[in-house]
Amino acid sequence: MTFLPIVERELRVAARKRSTYWLRTVAASIALVIGSVCLLFFGISGFAGPFGPGSMVFGAIMWLFVFIALGAGLFFTSDSLSEEKREGTLGFLFLTDLRGYDVVAGKLLATSLRGFFPLLAFFPIVALTLLMGGVTGAEFWKTSLALLNALFFSLAAGLFVSTISRDSQRALAATLFLMLFFIFAGPIGDAIIAHLAGRGFQPLFSFSSPGYVFRAAGGWGRTFFWQGLLTTQVIAWVLFGFACLLIPHTWQQKAGKTAVATKTWLYDWTYGKSARRTRLRNKLLPINPVLWLATRERLQLVGVWVLALLAIGVVTWLAVEIPIQGWMVLNYPVRLFILLLYLGAASQSSRFFVDARRSGLIELMLATPLSERKIVLGQWRALLRTFAIPVCIILALQLITSGLSHVSLRRTMSAAASATASATAAATAAGNTNASSGSNFVVNTTNTSVNFNYNPPSLRSITAQEWLTTIVDSLVALATTVANLVALCWFGMWMGMTSKNANLATLKTFLFVEIIPLIVIWIGSWMVIGYLIVPIMSRRGASASTSFMIWYPFMSGLLMSFLSIAKDVGFFVWSRKNLFLSFRAQAVRSISPPVLAIPPRISVPPVIPSPATGI
Image 1 (tube, one colour):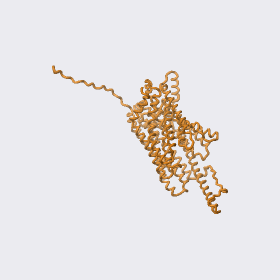
Image 2 (cartoon, rainbow, N blue to C red):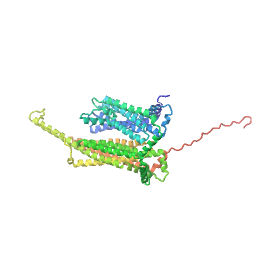
Image 3 (tube, rainbow, N blue to C red):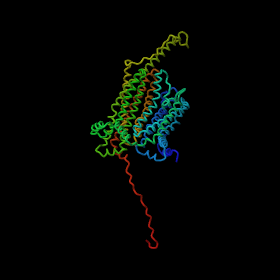
Image 4 (cartoon, one colour):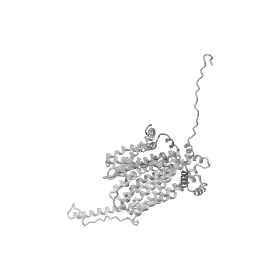
C-alpha cells in the first residue's frame, strides 16, 4: 500500500487547480503594491520610522500576512472534517486500510497548500528589504519562521476542532475562541503577574502564543524567540496528534438511551423548551415563515450577548485601571470586539441560505406562495431581531471610547508640545545668559529648572476645535461600523446563495467587503492626505507639528470613513438587487439536474450475404 495515499492524491489534485497558481500571483502582487506604496509615502513625507524605509516596508507586509496566517484555520480546516461527517462520506474512508493520520494529514495538506503557496510567493519580495536597510538577516529569517509557525498552528487548531464538531458555524466559533485563547491568554497572564508582583514583564505563559513568537522575532537584544517557537510547535503537533487519534471514533453517531438523552438535551438547549418553541412559532409564523425558521436557534443570540457583556466588562476594567492620559488604548479592545462582530455577521447571514440549499428547503419555499422578496426580507428581519440590542451596546461602547481616546490623544500631544517648547525656551535663555558672561560652550543649568510634570487633561480645558473634531470623528466612525454591518449582512446573504459551504461564503464575504477594500482605502487615504498636507506643513516649519499631528489623522480618517461608507452602499445596492431579481434563478442553478441513465447503443454487425444463396 502507498504511504499516505490521501496526501499523494491531494498533491496531484492541487497541481491541477487554477487556484494553486493564481493565489501565488495575488499574494506577490499584494506584497509588491504595499511595498511600492510605503516607498511612495516615504518619498512624499520623508518619514520612514527610526530604521529607514526597509523596516517600514518589512513591517507593513509581515503584519498583514501574519493576520492572514492566523486566520487560515478558521476558513480552511475548521469545517474540513465536520463537513465529511455531515455528508456521511468520512465513514467510507475507514472501511479501507486507512488510519486516522492518513485522513488528517491529507486534509491538512489539502488545506495548507492554499495558505503556504501565497506565503512562499511573497518571501522574495520581502527579502528586498534587506537591501534597503533597517532589516537584518536574522530578523528576516526569524520572522519568516514565525509566520510559517502561525500558519501551521492555526491549521492544526482548526483540524482539532473539526474532529470533534459537526456543525460548521460552531466549528468556526470554537476555532476562533481557541485561537484567541492561545494568542492573548499567555501574554495577558504574564502582564497580570508582572503588575501584581511590581516588576517588569517576563514571558512565561507567553511562550504558548504564536503572536508573541512573531513579536519576539523582530525584537532587539536577547529575546525568547526560540523558546516560544518550540513551545508553539509542541502545542500544534499535540493538537494534530489528538485529531489523528479522535477522528476514527468521532465520525459515528452514537445510538442508545444515552445518545437519545444527549440529543434531546442538546435540542432543548439549541431551540428552547416546548413552551418557548410554541410561543415563538405562534408569534412569528403568521408574520413570515422565514423569520420564524431563521430565529429558532438561540445559540447565536447567546453568543452575541456574551460578546457584548464581555466588551462592557473589559472596557470598564481598563477605564478604571488606566489613568486618563492612557485612555487612548481603549479603542483597541473595542475594535477587536467589532472585528468579531463583523465575522459573526458574515457567518450568520450566509449560513441560512447555504443550509437551506443543501437540505432542499429552498425548493420547498419556492413552491409556496412566498415570493423571493419575502424570503430575503425574512432573513434580514431575523438578523435584526437576533443581533439588534447587543450590537447597539457594542456601538455605544465604540462611540464612548472613541471620544475618550481622541480627547486623551489630543491633550497629550498638546501637553507634550508645550513641554518641548518650554524646555527649548529655557535652554535658549540659559544659553544667552552664559553667552553674556563669556562662556560660549558651557550651558549653566544649575539654577535653571524645567517643569516636565504632566498634568492630566481636564474636560474644561478642551477647546471648541478639539470638541468639534472629536464629535465628528466619533460619529463618522460609528456610521462606518453600521454601514459595514449592513453591507456584510446583505452581501453575506448573496454569498450564501452562490457558495457551496458556509465557511467559504463567510470567507468571501469578509474578504470582499472588509479586507480588500480596507487595504485599498487605507493606502489611498493616507497617500492622498499626505500628498496634500505634508507640503503645506513643511512650508510652515516646525510650528505646524502639533497641527499636523491633529489634522493629519483626522482628515485621513474622515476620508477613509467616507470611502468606506460609499463602498458599503455599493455592496448593499448590488446585493439587494441580485437577491430580489436573481434569487429564483440562482436557487434553480444550485440544484443539480437529474442525471438520466441512457442505455448505450448496441452496434449490430452488418449482415454479409451468403455467396451461395445471395441472402
